[in-house]
Structure formats: structure tokens, C-alpha cells
Length: 266
Length: 348
Image 1 (tube, rainbow over the protein chains, first blue to last red):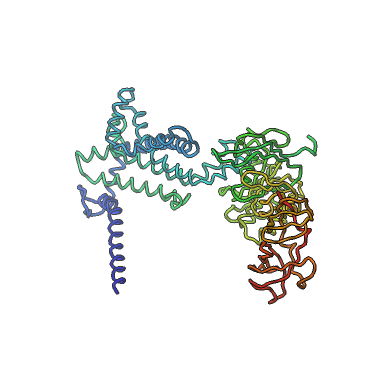
Image 2: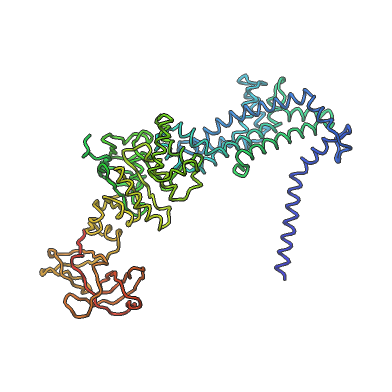
């Protein structure tokens, strides 16, 4: 029974690979959350004892909470901006045939290809030149820029999958172009819109490189704060902050799941 | 505008995509209350024509008039048309009632009036109990009727139907066809519809426009188009038929090169005739006057009748006949037949 043997071997190796992949995906989060619950003064896995003390320390730290809010605010505003720009770009690329359309599409996706360091350096020079250096607007533009590829891609796919006859039906029922977008196109694209927004938010929320380059004295984002903190000390407050971020992300995903169903989005 | 004026007029309408011609100089008038069908195989330009009336396709040249007004350059949302799409295009995120109210809302009808109109429309298509349902919860036939109600809610000048039955199964199709015709006639709605199904066209339409390769082959009532086809294409596309090509001699007898001969009512010269299978009948006995000998090439069983492919002196003819159980001829058998000369039609 040679074939049987090969089948079983394949099955077993498949199982091993899956186990390995899941572990690698899950382990960092599990380790961080476990470490954050330690009662000791050093970050260690497995944790020594169980306590919430580092969580209360994190919540009480104006340094970290300020950075968290700064990050949330920045990511939210940048998400709104990139969604607006991204939808317009995706709409134009999907619906119209204009000269330079392919180049425009490539341009919209290019922040994915250019290394973040190069982008940060370039933007730093550029902003210094136009006087946006070390400003909130500069940081906002930078973050919007790195979100755009995800938004344009996701919304472009959503638009391509949309049944165009539904829009024609709306037009036939006396809906003006903007009414068609408002009442038919956007509601039908809700899954794509949410998924694009989540991608965009996460991209900004986790970004270090660009924020380091464009960061200003007043606003420090959470990833940058964590990064700078690690350079000087290594206590479990970092793990607790990470734990908070993981919990918030999970909550958002659960809320979306309840509202529209993650399976429809991803 | 008087009642006699056409509701829809197409004047030398033309649409080209690059080098290919989708619709070639089409002129057509649709009268008030008329049910007109654009019939043809896929790619003949019938859907393009319908979409030019709705405004989704801009003609390369020519004019579209609706209720006497030139709408050639008018966007779809300013045209007085109501369209039922092939896939119905019901808005999946709206209930049946909201789907029907959509157009009313867009033209600013008051809420109370909207509700009344939606109810009237649902009554018209006999689905008042489904107002709160969503499209995905409806059967294909119900979806079609909701799409119809939605299109009629604005009381358009012309109703446009794009292959309205192609997504339904055969049994339902026939039933809904009759219902649709009754409904349209009851409200006296001018209707333009597109189909590739000749049976559907014959049964539904007041007038049929047969199209092929972007050109009009014939315009006429179902009887005219079926009984007196103008061209070879029409004869072959609508129903079954056999083509007889030959030369009419001085005695008024049509003779083919293979030796088949039959008297016809036509002037001498080369001519092409068609004959429908129902005009070819099995003869009671061989040797009677006007009788031909035929060899059965193949026989197809269709339940109510059999369709036979015959060889009559080298000429292929189709015949429809009903045989009692177990009495049908077999392929290769020789049988006597009669040809009803009244069924012979000369074509261009």
C-alpha cells in the first residue's frame, strides 16, 4: 500500500506545517499577554506570579496613554482622509478610461513598493522644503500616503465586483449620479469600505518608521513611544500596553463581526 | 401630442464600436399601448438598441425620441422610461417596498403618497404580502414581478424589458408570459422588449422587429413574420423551415437542380422559396395526384408530434406529423407525402 503511505505522510506533514504556522502567528501575542500579567519587575515568560499591577501602571502613565490617544487620533483622521482620496481614486480607475490611467494606478500603489525608510527620508526633505517639517499636517500626510495603496486596492476590488446593472437600475429610477453613489454604490460596498478602513487604521496605528522621521516634539505616537521606552528600560509596562492594544483590536473586530460579519469582509 | 403620435421613435439610429457595427441605421416607431418586440440572436444589436432608448448607450448617430422629445443626449435619469433588467437588478440592501419606492423618492413624491403607490403596485403584481421581504428571499418569478412593479411605479412613458424571462424555468416562463401580457394590456403600457426566444416573441408581441447583425430584417405582426417571412434569415430564425432554391419555368413550375419540381404561383426566373414543416403532410397512399416520394433521413420525437427530415428527389424538406403509437416510420424508409402549395413563400 505505497499510495496509502504517501497519503499519510502528506497528511502528517500538512498537520505539522499548519501547527507551526498557527503557533508562529499566535505565539507573540500569547507571550506578550502572559508576560504582562507578571507580578515581578522584569518582563519574562513564563511570568512570575499573576497580577494586574502593570495594567494599572500603564493606564496611570500619562506618557503611554497620551501616546495611545495621539495614535488613535492620528490614525482616525488619516483613515478618513485616505478613505476619501482612495474611494475617489478607485472610482476613477474603475469607471473611466483616461490617459495615464495605468500610471495613476501604479502611482497609487507605489507607497507599498518604496521602502518606508526611503519614503520617510524623502518626505522629511520635502516637508522641510515646503515648511511642513515637524508638523501635525506633515505627519498626517505621511500616514495618509502609506494607507492609500491598501485603500485603493481594497475599494478597487470592491468596485470591480459590484453589479453595475444595480447602478443602471438606480439611474433608470431617476437617481442622479451622486444619489446613485449615496444610495446604491456605497451601501453595497460596505464590506469593502470597512475592510479598507481597518487596513488603513492598522497600517497607521502600527507604523514606527515614518512617525520617527516625521514626528514632532508635541505628538508622539504609541509605537514610537514603545520604541523609545525599550531603549532605556525593559519593564512589563510595555507588555501591558501591548495587551491593551490587542484587547482593543479584538473588540473592534468582534464589533464588526456582529455588525456585518468578518467573513464578508476578509 | 395626439394619441396617434408614436411614444418612442428611433430615427436612423446607429451604434458602432470601433470598426464593428452594433446597430445599423435603425428606424422604428412604437405606438401608444403597443407591445413591440426586438427579436434576434445574441449579438444582433437588440439589447444595444434597448439600452440606447434607456440612455445607457450613446448612439453614434441618429435620434431617439420619447413622447415627441429628442432625448438622444439626455442622461438616463432624466428619461421617462422604466426598465426591467435581465437579472432584475433589485437592490439587495432594500426591502421589496423600498425597492419600489426608490424611484418615487427620487422624484420627490411625499411619503404618504409613496406608500399608497407602493401598495397599488404590489397589488397590481399580486404580491402585497411580500412588501417587507428582501430580494434574496424571493423566488425568480417573484423577483421578476417586483422588478416590474418597481419599473411601473413611476408610470413611465415606455416600459423596457430586457430578456425578462431568460432566468426562469420553462413552465413558469409560459405562465408568467401570459400574465405579463394581460397586465401590460390592462394598463395600456407602451412596451419595448428584447428576446432571443422566437416563441416568446410570437406569443407576447403586437409587432416584432426581427434583427440580425445590427440590421432590421423584417417588421411585422407575429402572423406576418411567421407566415410571410421577408428574408431567408427570418424564415430560418422563426420556427422551422425548409429552403427550396431553383428556377421557375414558363409553365410556373419550380425546378431545382437535383430534379425536385413543384408548381408555384410566380413569374419565371430564378427564385428561392421556403416552406414550413406543417405544410408538408404524410399522404394516405402513394401514386395520388400531387404526391411525392420521400425518403426519411431522420426522425425526431417531440411528444405531441414528430419532426422528420425528408429527402424528396434530392431536396431536403422538413415535415411535422403525428403518428399513432408505434406506427411512425424509421430512418431510411420511403413514404408518400403531400406538399400544400399554399405554404410556399417566396423570399428575397
